[in-house]
Image (cartoon, rainbow, N blue to C red; front, side):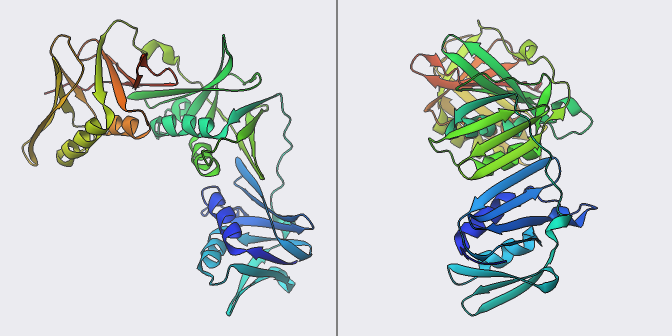
Length: 375
């Protein structure tokens, strides 16, 4: 193998696979990335056997060949090199030589034959979705996936195909038992999804790096217990978790509660200031809703007290509700609209949040946060 490749092109490709490789695996080859040079360029493959990434990089290939190299080490080397053009040459005993100007590296590799072969993928249905919309789905739900491995059915994001008057949409839902996030995106085609299959946390992390948020379309292929995403010159494949996701509809509040409309930026700034005195994430912050005003505050013997009032559009019964402030901050961080809408009923009932438009709540996403009992 002997080729010339752009440093930044190779660096970007290696950056995408850092969250896939297994650094502590009992199989050392899983910490490596497979480089295969052909007349068409370089194909880069990374996998942990549950998640896989294949990327195609432009390169001037003088001699074809392949080798598996430690992905983390190669990434550190490549991004440190001084010149924009790199020469990669495979030497005997799977040694990879890297030359950039006056800088020279030789790193050990493994035979390409030792790298795991990806299983065949049989597509049952295929849809197309705008890159930015799929990225939005992931951004708006990923933080609610449970991290408690004993609750297996909550350790991934649930996918649901929904048919409406304007065609099909894809809904992604995640919950950790304390809050629930759901987001919808319109798609082209009919998704056929195996029931009770969950997108694992690791796959969501990779998707956030893979998707650029552009207006280009992404192809999603649904197989038996697996999904394949094809985007430009990249292919991402992952197995879905075989877990039972709870019926999330039972915790979604019904219409008929009190509505609160607040300017998002002002609300976000207030949360940031109040959270300075929050000792831990289990301590509730007090939200006192009154006519035209919301007071947010906390009283802490060790840290002190803070109160701040902001103007809101509210004309219901005065109500005090306790919330985990971090949960609200995470919701606010993934909404780009100017206003946020609360839907309340009682101090201990689930609270619905969503972006607020001129005609009411934005139907593309909603968030349910369980309140906390105030002392």
